[in-house]
Image (cartoon, rainbow, N blue to C red):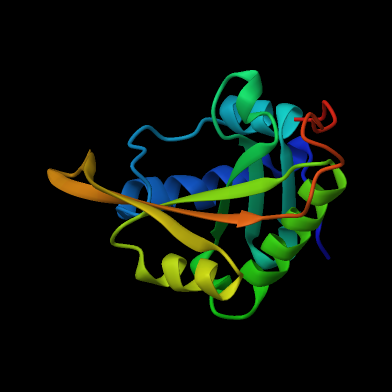
Length: 167
């Protein structure tokens, strides 16, 4: 069952995230996430979890400034044992529904260029590739490309419509 994360989830979320940081190049991040980092994200962002099935999804501001207020960027990570079983699809579907309810217009995915699985997943979920930034990241001595994909979540109420202040 997908639900909002709470501080009790911080430990297993950190375990999943830190394994990805330590052992892959699908994130450009090199510093492990502390429990305080995760608790802060739980307190300040939308974060949905599948606790018994090992996965989470979160979103937050895409960029600073009021002109970007209707756009969010998301992260979705699964424990290796949960991959390929529809868990990512369920989490991203729920995350998009939440973002729509909160009035967001665009959801962005920033994906490492070596992560073909995530690129295909997002394409299957209706995201379109909008940018390929060559060698903008570096990890483990390797230059990494960044793929930006986006999905329009729905029309906003008007040109000046702003999302609710929930993120």
